[in-house]
Length: 332
Image (cartoon, rainbow, N blue to C red; front, side, top):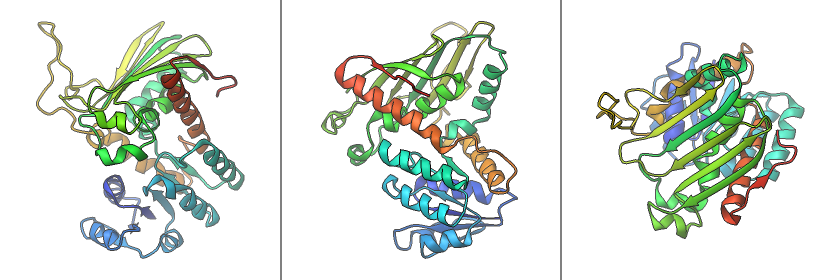
């Protein structure tokens, strides 16, 4: 199997390395719009070779992973659809809701598999959490709490094009939590502050935020995220049900210190960033993608689900700006 990777920046190169480690992958084809970048990346990776054009990449590949800038995603996804080539596209598949809706409709009409790169759907612990919720092992869901903090702020030059904290950082939780709970969100309330760097305010954004989601069945989820944690990268999901309470992301590398006498202490090897924290998820994402390409697996992250998380992100942003809760009639 030959898998193409369009875009070999940090995350594209990581994906290419994970693909090359899979026995099912015979070759990893690389393309990048920056001249010479694909050849440089290919020289450092097993099974990798560069291609000169995106069209050439799609023509030669059995499946394509899109990791280029967001504004190029729709055109590359459409080119893959035209070639009937399965594609895994990094989130978001389009920059705004209107364009994403049109693209999702095209994807569903064509039938070519398109996976969206919300890696938490591929994390083994999160997948197990979803299984336990779906089978009723936790009982009725009372409350969900998600924590997501970067170790260090992103490059400040990225902020004006990031889409804001809800579309960029918390979008992963806004995808994962409704997927886990299995119910539509009917109302959101969100708030944010600038506490880390005034550059976020200059970009009309915030660097710390919370969001409260109310589900159709009455359960609530509280999401908290920010751009700086001095101990390391921290992402956890905790679910309290009528029969049990469980957590994912809580392990010896979690950057959290308990003040109880026998409580856990933050160790020196706390997660430095998302590639390390979600390494198992990213590896499994590539395995699942190759299984979808081969026709052996169903798509766990379909394009239409991206509309849910983007609608929620936009509602959170609207709530943050107005200070009022936002109702989501007919949300799914």
